Every structure is written in structure tokens, then in C-alpha cells.
Image (cartoon, rainbow, N blue to C red; front, side):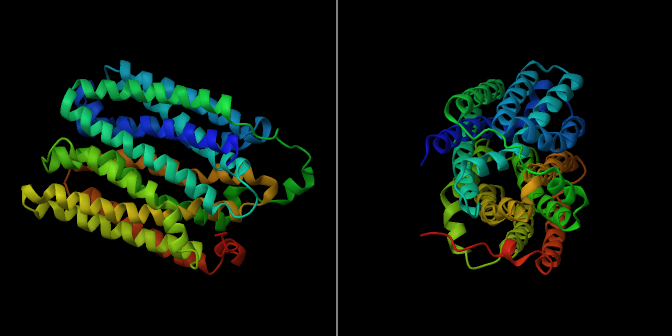
Length: 400
């Protein structure tokens, strides 16, 4: 493994440890520490996150001009400012500003990350580089989730502020590691302008838009899980305080351990077929999770952890989405296509806090909405399977 690839994985691990520590606590932090009602908290965080909607389009052009590495480093620093904003928040206005900064940095980061991974990886299909990066990120995210559970049990209310502060430090450390350890070729500008002009933009390519929408409908489950598991487990089910952190750690650990295994197990299937199976499992996860309302309190932790296993398996299958987008994107405008692909995750992250806010209406309502979205993803992916190029659906055989 090259120094740049190793450095990138280490930096991503540091980033995701901090995110795993704080992300599952965001809604609880805003309600319990800042003191906002759950419905207001969901609306404010979602409204602040809307600021990230414009970042994918900006990111594509920035990557073309200065390269993915510099954009990712800047995004990490922007996220650090957002975490500091949460740490100083005392009212809804400051929470909204912090959410804007954090969301803008997150979307700028993820809009550029696929290009950076592709730049650092070897030539050929990108399924494995994306899977390895996801494996490292998920493993470190799970460690952060475990730390979050431990903090809640040991430090009580102080755990929330410790988590936010650690998240800010992790973003700054990731930026430093990327700047010191990762080296990629300078951006190339010799692509003929006529070649670029001959390519449709990502937002006018209906098949690529279909990939974005289908992925967004499916991954809403992941964002809903991360934002809502603590609210559902502690506020609705009144379970033990360690459960949300344990569930996040379990999901991240399974993804960290199983990313490359899932890739090998499904290498004979088309990318959209694998994603269809993952989306269907998200529907099952919603059903199993809402069933916890009817389970005796003593068994609810076991039931929710079992549901988390189903969710993690679905997430493993959805890892093919990034490689599918990379394979479909025209080479001349790859950065802009992959940046636009981030809209799948941007919209999902915007909607997730609002979906969590629906717990104030009924404990079963968010699960119904999320399961419906996953079911729509299945239908759309089936439609795309017959229309995307065969070379994008079935990559070249993976080595070893």
C-alpha cells in the first residue's frame, strides 16, 4: 500500500472516530444540553443542513480547479468550526449556524471524497478501494459509538460536551494528516474543452439522476438510524443509556469487518442487483425496529441490536453505489458527476432530522416513512437495471 493510500485511510479513521462519538448524540445534545424541544430541534437542525444543498455543485468545480485533496482538507476545517459552534450553542439561532457550518463542510467533504479515493487508488474498477475506505471509516465510527456509550454511562450530561469537543479536534487532526501524508498528482487541465462540452451535465443526465434518487431513498435509512436511534431507544422505548452507542458500534463494526467480504460474496451479481437487495433489507429493518414497541421492556435491547444487524447488512450492500456512479460518470466531467452524486446523501442528511422529529407525532410514523422510501428505492433500481450500460452494472472480475 502506498504512503498516500495509507495516509488517507488513517485520516479517514480519525475523522470517523469523532463523528461516531458525536453524530448519534446530536439530537439529544440539542434537546438536553441546549434545551430545545424535540420538534424544534429536528426542524432547526434540518433547516441548517439545507445549507449543504449547494455544496456538491460547488465542489465539482473546485475539484477541477485545485484538486480533490485541497477541497477535502478545507472541508475538514469547516466541519471543525461547525463542531465548535455546537459546543458554544445556547439557543436555536446558534444551533442553526453550527448546523450550517457542519453540513456545508460535510457535503463539501463527501462531494470530493470519491474523487480523492479514485485519485489515490490504482486503475481499474473502484469497488474495492471504496469498500476498503468504507471498512476503515465504519470500524473507527464504531469505536466512536462505543466511546459514546461509555461516556453516557460514566460522565452523564458532561458526556455530550466531551463528545462535541472531541469531534472538533478529530476534524482538525484529519485535515493535518491529509496535508502531511497524502500526495496526489496535480490537477490535469489538458482535457479538450470540446470534450467537456460534448458531455451532458450530471443534472441533465436522467439515468444518473435516477442513480442519485435511488441511492438517496435507500441511504435515508442510514442517516435516520444515526440521528434517531438514541431518540427512539431512550425517549420512546426508555431503554438503557448504553444502547444507542452499542447499536452504532455494532453497525460500524459489522461494516468495518464485512465490507470486503460482502464485495466478494456478491461479485457475481450486478451492482444494481446488490443495491436492490440492500434496499429491501432496509424495509425489513424498519419493520423489525418498529416491532420493538410491542416487545417487553427487558427484551427491547436484544430486539434493537438484532434489528441493527439487519440494517448493517443492508448498508454493506449499498456500498456498491459509489462504484456504480464512478463507472457511469463520463471521464471528462468525472469530478462534477461524482460531486453531484453526493446529492443522494445531502438530501438524506437534510431529511433525517425532520423524520426523527416525527417521533413527537407517533413512535411508529418515522419507521413507516423510512420503510416506504426504501421500498421506492427498490422499484427505481429495478427500472435502472434495464437501462444502464452493461459495463457499469457488471465490472471486470476483481483480483484474488
